[in-house]
Image 1 (cartoon, rainbow, N blue to C red):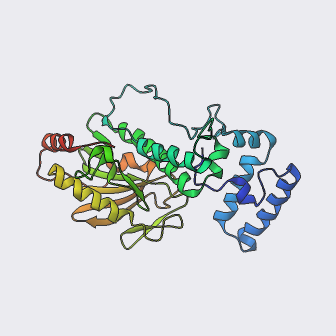
Image 2 (image 1 turned 135 degrees about the vertical axis):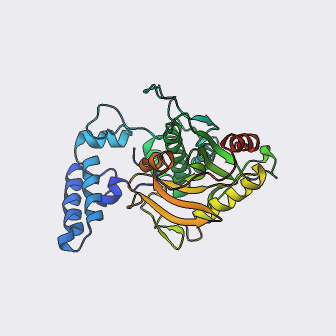
Image 3 (image 1 turned 180 degrees about the vertical axis):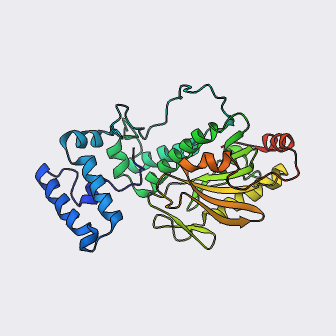
Length: 320
């Protein structure tokens, strides 16, 4: 399932979702000519048009896309939907990392609340994850759902790191606030939480899982891209949250990472620099396990004992 923030194939082709087959085909041919690199277009735009046609170019593909049951790679298995994932069955005998918290839960609660306000208080919503409903919602609401899915997908990767790791998901970093008061949402996402804390042989990591619906890069130690708000500073925000948790738990993070979907960062892994001694990385999700799990990052523990760090984090961790 594409990101909730992704442009629909109808938008890419410049037609309404109700366009006829002939209108769709005509629009596709026009867009191919306009976006072809030989006629002044770009490879990225050209590929986007081709992908849009794959999604809705045939009656079967269009019906699957409109219903949210698209399949990938010719597989007989449906792609993941926008709904919360079902508990996964164990497909490997390898021990999993010890995990705590509820990844994506806070964002899904916010999504459902704002969706209800947008639709209308008291109005019935038979399926809040219906693809057509999601695609018609304001970007602010789509972003909440995209953030929830990003957290859930990253949590799966982190759990697979193995028995040498402990993972805490959705950890609060505003200890002065009462738990019942909840968090606040702003341009930086959920102010007051770290999406994932991972502890293992490569150190203590603080991570934010993000999906801005477009590709991103780095400049002067920050993430930049068309999908970010003008005042959005993900690394500065993550560093601030990490600092607050460090004071509470009396630990030091060895690395900070912004995790983005596959294809969102052309380099795959970017070593951005460091903030207060913690190395900073922008990493695509498929590269995360290698970065964190094999010490490919060059990150290593300081003098504090691994068991002692785990004890301190566990004692300080409060979940949203």
